Length: 148
Image (cartoon, rainbow, N blue to C red; front, side):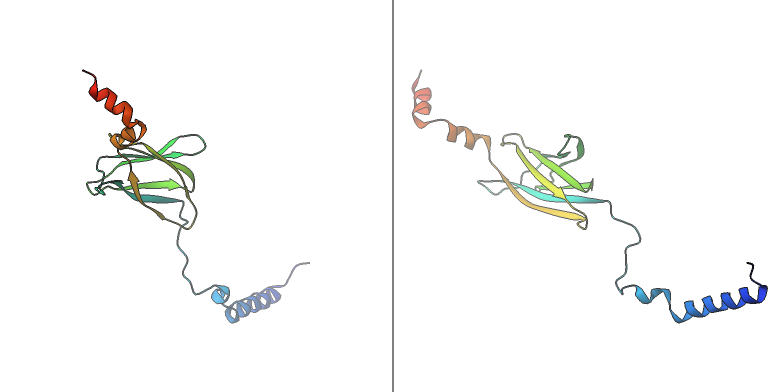
């Protein structure tokens, strides 16, 4: 069944009138939406010495995928101990921190949708000299020092 030119015009006018009386934005919220989807985020934190509170500079920080240990991002801490790891896709990671003279640190972290920056806070690392003296009994230490 074909419509006549007149019927098509009426039908078109009716659709036009309906679209004018019902604006397309009537069902949208007043909240503006981002123009593109966010697919990545960042982690930030600070490293300090557990006993002195001094910032740890030149520390190596690596972000690895938890499932396959693939390196995603790496950074060296600034003079104030701060680090930032950018452009990580949403998912589960392990944060690896190594500083010469300190116990290495490993922590599982997650970056979930809706968070473009995860503040990891401050990590206090333990100096190796403190862990060595804690592991060595005092009597052994005295025996080592007393031997000629």
